[in-house]
Image 1 (cartoon, rainbow, N blue to C red):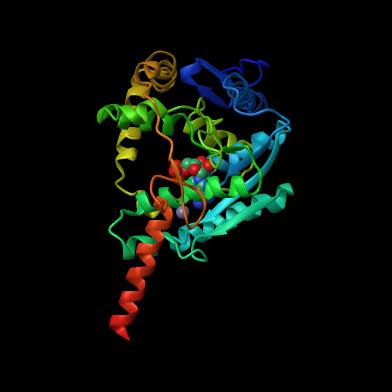
Image 2: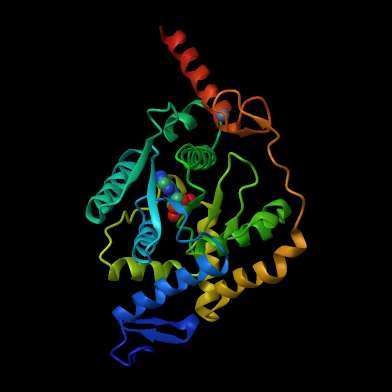
Length: 307
Ligand code: AMP
Ligand code: ZN
């Protein structure tokens, strides 16, 4: 099989694009796909400083690699979630990338904030992924605002977006469907724009890119994600994709073009400011701070019982 661009020997075949590439041309193709998504969806400009959320996984490290190569102004933000050796390795891989590429990284250790994921789940009834999601949303916005970044980029890829779309459709979560987009504008002075520059490239393409670029990433999935419904949807979509190449891309693209406008509902912004952390909130205290104070209260009462 020959490379579509240079006619040399192809190393990767992309059935959904009906073509194949050699190593060097695939890298160019991948980076162009990302650049096109950034420009077409007006995610950010070369003049804007971009905060990149890096977990140490292949997607976010590949994203950061592309943005550096394309000449965008980036800084990384990493949350050490405190999930045992999984978090340990994630942080190590992120820091190794930063060292190698001479980049700037902001790290938040949730344990230092009294909000390590295992602590939040042990002391509240919240499922791990819900608590973790609340903490991520809180710190991504907060770090971006405090450090003056107008935009936050995450490594969500086509498979993530297709699985999320399937989940939202399965339950007809119309409010979620209205907001599912590769670009979410800041709707509040203390929120920042959220963008997903990898939304058109598949998990497979991202893995190939990371491999070709020699990026060392954490291969393990989060131990809490075992059995997550998101993985079931990904599996179902992969089976559809194998039988009908291009299914995932058209599912997401056509949703954005034709489906989403039908779901547009007026979004309600948090009307208040959290009295503890100053972030937007629906009540006197935001959902993250109330989760954290629930943890603190339970920890204190446990200590009192033991002491
Ligand atoms: P996930 O929800 O784990 O699939 O991750 C989706 C995206 O969120 C990743 O591509 C990253 O951009 C970001 N992300 C996830 N976990 C972290 C973390 N611990 N620190 C920083 N960013 C993260
Ligand atoms: Zn708060």
